[in-house]
Image 1 (tube, rainbow, N blue to C red):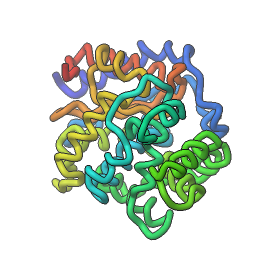
Image 2 (cartoon, one colour):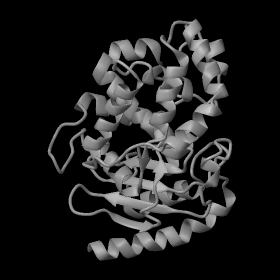
Image 3 (cartoon, helix red, strand yellow):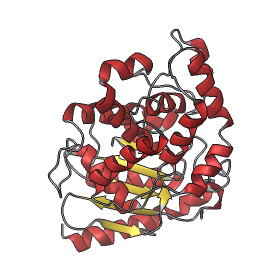
Length: 310
């Protein structure tokens, strides 16, 4: 199929599912995220060469939020090794909300079930090596720059500050884990890093390129550099399948079947193994924290182009 035909089809799919934005709600529990346009919807698909095929408000920037958990996990494993990381964070899906503390209290040992929930992500970010918050953040950004070939990507200080000031539950998770020796160091410094990590700004083009690198064994197609080792990409992909869409991950695997990770800004990153990278933005969320229209759009793409890995 010619690229112009793909473009037309993609635009039609966005128009078709945009009606679902009215059923969602922006994440106003983080004040700055609550300012997003709930009707926004965009998508970019990257195939490893040339420009992205895209539709919707494709130049609009948004923050990675929980999508950053995937990148922090890859960096932490590169820094510390699998044994160290998974001695402190588990590998099991959870049916609980992403910010729940319940399993920390009931599990023995009291470590997070997986790196895609908030407790696990905080523990993982705590493992990233660097002499201070700025150096650790720069290392996360450097990884993203290598994946996207875009060194202009930074973070939104306003969003980071808004999240930091309202991070009451995340503080509770951190102090609980510090009590049980899952994390170490200063809690406020960890939260500063974590909120800045979540506030990294991208657009759908950037997100589709990140997805492409994860889909294709960790290699940047433009530079041909092995950005993430293959065995770590395999781990990351598996977590995206089992835990990437919060407690909708099982249903998502059946309906869509694409390794993906969502964030409460409305972003969704998809990575079709040995195929394409997908970046979606739709800030109106369902009750589980996933983009309502974005989920519908990914499902439509998966069905139309037979993208499911199952």
